Amino acid sequence: MTERRPRKDAARNRAAVLAAADTLFARCQSPEEVTMADIAAAAGVGKGTLFRAFGDRTGLIRALCEARLEPIRTAVEEGPPPLGPAAAPLQRVPALLDAVLCFKLDNRHLALALEQTGSDSPYRTAHYERWHTLLRDLLEQIPGSIDSDFTAHALLAATRADLVEYLTGEKRMPREEMRGQLAAFTAGVLETRG
View 1: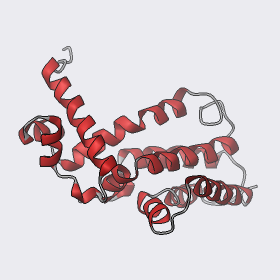
View 2: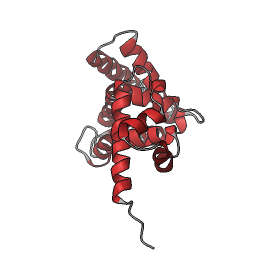
View 3: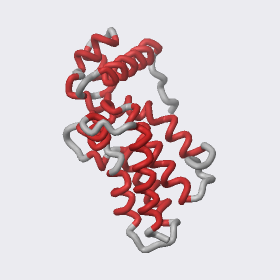
């Protein structure tokens, strides 16, 4: 059986909704401010269209986040070193963490909204599990006795959106300083594995 392609108007509506949501999250002071009604109005569609296409606000946030993460995922799966698969684990681990941090810095409110989505743990989202599994697998290739599973969680904790929001908002830490701090922290963790 062949897979049905979405109607042109449905694909157009989906693109409009994602673009509207992207703009609203980028401009908001807090992710809670952005409602489905706001997104529908900005996209020029009815709220029913949003619910049919995405299920709920969480589904919409996840879809937008996945679309935004696609360039990073492609770089990790197919790109050149230091992020791509040909890089040694000692290169890839800091590069991956830097890419995740930069994504969170560039998409603070969207990432925060995703981490704050209601029912389940932020540690059970598809993107978190993907990054954790990759980090864990890379860490297992580096000699040392530290538990790779825990270390991957601990390293990813340094890129959580709520921490990024706190450091950039209340602490006013500049982007490059935050990236440098994460790189130094990661280097310290990796040194203990050798």
